[in-house]
Image 1 (spheres, helix red, strand yellow):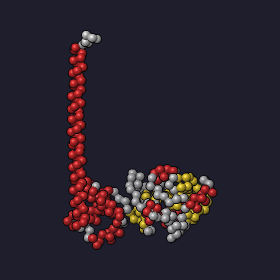
Image 2 (cartoon, helix red, strand yellow):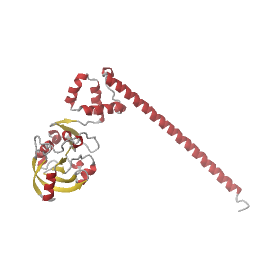
Image 3 (cartoon, helix red, strand yellow):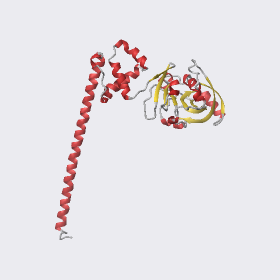
Length: 294
């Protein structure tokens, strides 16, 4: 949270991956809520933040009873996952109550600069239309916390971190940064890879995804492993296979492009010839004039 507050990049995305409802998470762990509500810059309204989302049907019902525009005392989350910090007391204004196709009846509660989306059913906020339904513009926020495991970068994202087990670590880099990390990872001795991942804040699953992207796609960036001779036999074989496959596919694309160009040129020549033939016929028709039957 300190990184998010200090960062100049906006919006600053945080993935609360440890409570990802798409991977069996309870969707009501309150670690992120407690951190957001406890941050003075957010509670004072100096910074704007949104938590999307947390499931708590009782809180939604209380918001319905209070009505939009009214303020009340809420106790949010910590019912399914009751581990610390547990249910969070929050004084908030009911900004919106609406029915949604994924999260059921949902409420948007506002506390200072913090907006909390509370749902009746567990759901992931993975699509922009979900935010639109709740009248939330992530691009206007300073900090956006989403209960998802993996967030892919798009022009909206300033900086993304992943929160796992209370720790916050940098997870999302540019394509070049990912490629450089993979290039370094590939030549590490097998016994040191786990420690290296921990030190760099990268999960094993994420590295596997990056590695395949790098070997299969980012080779075009010209960022090959720095020392292929030191790669393990498995990594070396995979690298060689994927590099060869990439070359074959590139050649196939070039051949398809060449054939397409030839076909276009052939059609163009045929079209030109047809145009000339039509022109000659028209000239002959004019010279001959009308027939006797006309």
